[in-house]
Length: 231
Ligand SMILES: [Zn+2]
Image (cartoon, rainbow, N blue to C red; front, side, top):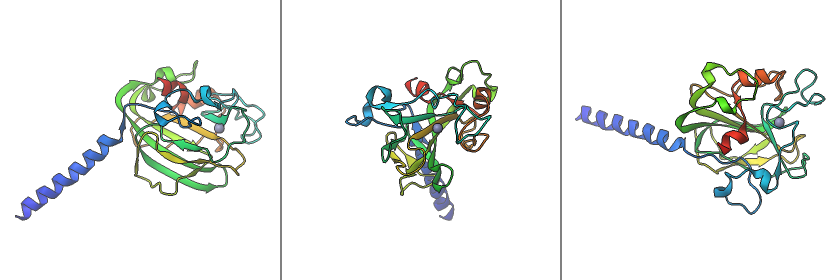
């Protein structure tokens, strides 16, 4: 009898593990910001057509040599900074969304350097070739060329207070809002290839989200968010 109970218990536990895994996989991606009057089902369209803006200096791989935050020698941006259409850092309280089904890997609030952030691990429904989504004219490590795991990092946000590490989120779920009172009132959004499905986001070399070269951005596994979401 004891043995039977044990077997049932193990079967139940295995069932739970598989159930969680299955529902965390994502077969579709959407954008992390959404225009007014658009439903989440329309969010796979580029938000730049609907009231959002990414400027060239703070786009993916952008070069911002006089950036007062990053300091000299770290001008390259591994992410996209999402602003409303005027392109200025005057956003505040706009919701940001899970780009797919995923698992919360880190939640940070009240950080003196970047405000707050949510890091989400996403498992894609199938293995894909990431190579086309890296910065052009850079060399991609073999480790990052193929796989099915990515990390999305949402920075300068106030995370939803109910988020917990290990929790599942679904595509389009509200993860928090852009901080209205922090020095950088936009969403800094990064996507990295996660070769093993269990690594944490790397921290940019100067610690404030900028790199010394585009090659270093590629070496840490960053891919172009918009091009990747659009597929
Ligand atoms: Zn940024």
